[in-house]
Image (tube, rainbow over all chains, first blue to last red; front, side, top):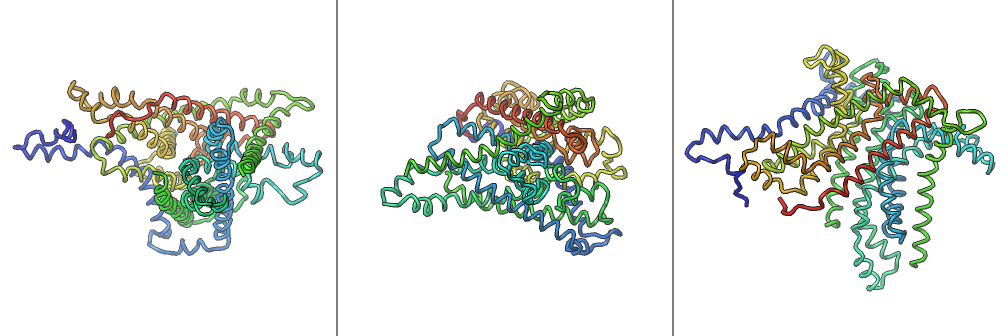
Length: 302
Length: 264
């Protein structure tokens, strides 16, 4: 069936090469709108920003903007952003994996599995302003959980130094979409652990711990690492949750960039482009690692 | 050993569930506290009665509908054509559809502001309508990874080549083939992509705020900064909308065909 009518149409008349040459570009017309769209609204704007990062106000090429990223305030913003993204990604990945294993392998009732996956689909998309509202209502100074802890257990978390507007508060909030995202992505990999492997290990006399250490962890490791870097990129680019939670005061990169776009707070548009360029580099690297790890992981999932 | 692992599974599941359910319960309880001394739905009444809620929510729904239309127009013919004629371009197209996950939304919109200003060759930002269009375009890029994946999965389950040949023999043109043969066959996949796009777009904050459009996301942020109980009500309303979209996707996926009669 390879020689179908559709693929034949291009060389319907072998005696007229002109026609077949004319038909060739028509192949491309079908995908032209997509490529024009991608070029105009995805690639060119990004390249424009990257080019701007390497220019000064007069339009000459320079590395000054990139070097200026090392000024204390911006370097600190990158560092805090990286820390928040890293901690929320690692915690999200570990907890998400534990929940996925519990639901898939733990002998829980089957309906819990589909309920968990459905909920994860919802919660992983429930980021942004409303999520911040929920956590303020829960763990804010007058939040329900804060009051309950204080009145029933006598623990005043705010006098213990906790605040929902702090580093750990932000991480606790980010976990609400990081853990579900991990569950959604890692569950197929956990499903891919074949029952036979466990039986084979048991037949060979492996203990439960040996089975985990020598079979499960090595098989899941690439998927785990890959998804972790994806979670990292996910947290790194998040603006709305952090902005709604802490306002413009928190010194992380997306919020710095937000303030810069709003009102040129760095007093140098090109430095703003450099800030954006730095974000692309970090999320780009994270995604590159994700693809590499995912490719390794697919070996086991076939 | 079996018993022990089940105990751990329940423990992990229980702790996780507490973490996920508690904020929802707390938000709900908080949203009922507007009237002093008793529970009431006053916060919800005040939200739904707020003319700004109605206008911004309507605006975002309209933007979401246009986003879905643009996404379908862009993705369905492309994914179809790639499957039929240009399979060697598939990695390129897949890479492009993944770009919005690599480039954060805030960077994309920053690029737009720089590129489409009033003095540029494509001055989208010169007029309010143009900015609306740019917001729709920006949202379409955000939804692109999900829309493309959904449609491509849908196309995998039908025999694109045979359908096209049959339609061509009966004298159908390309527009007819895509609109009346391919689209109805992948409708469930398209709708899944559409609902996911809707869930992403409806409360989006960053792009709408930086393009200064009166959308639901910036309205939410503004309410959060200025009132006490309404934000909780709004958070639950948003959660319900996301939940609704995901449930519809789940329901739709039950009607989706499982596999192709013949692999392409």
